[in-house]
Image (cartoon, rainbow, N blue to C red):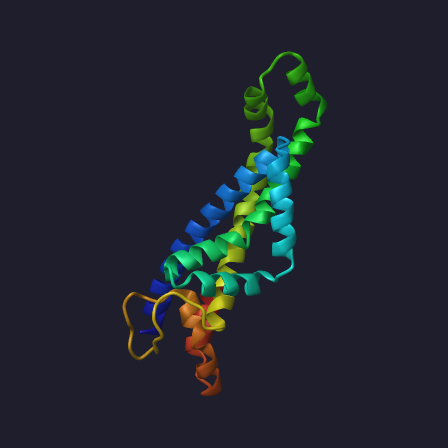
Length: 201
């Protein structure tokens, strides 16, 4: 049944989205905090990497990384590729917020009164980072899901090729369900096309 297949695909896709978003957040927060606290080597490395990444659209960069890493592990290739194309946004947002808070008079006053760097960071920066990162997490989750759908439509997906008549294990994710959309559009069968698209939306 198409709807059962969509439900299984949605669950697998959400698991993949959750893992990728966590990876993007970990990388982004780690690099962003280090840059915000003034790590010059890390900032230089991130700027160089950002310039290189910014030269590619996210979809193209993800395809290049997946193709390059797929001989090692298809699942690992997807995770790394999808995490690498989005962590820069989180890092930049985190860095800007850390620098902004540390430049405020209350943070400078805390440092002048003898508060250690870690204590100042935990007491003044972290409360300002939380709401920004919660919002960014929602944006990152939607971006990963859309990227998964785009990759699937271009025939880059996890699992094996399939048709809706025969369900192969492991269950395909939503990107794989979108990979056959072109064939169904040409034969004017709309349920297999609209159901995964609706799930992604």
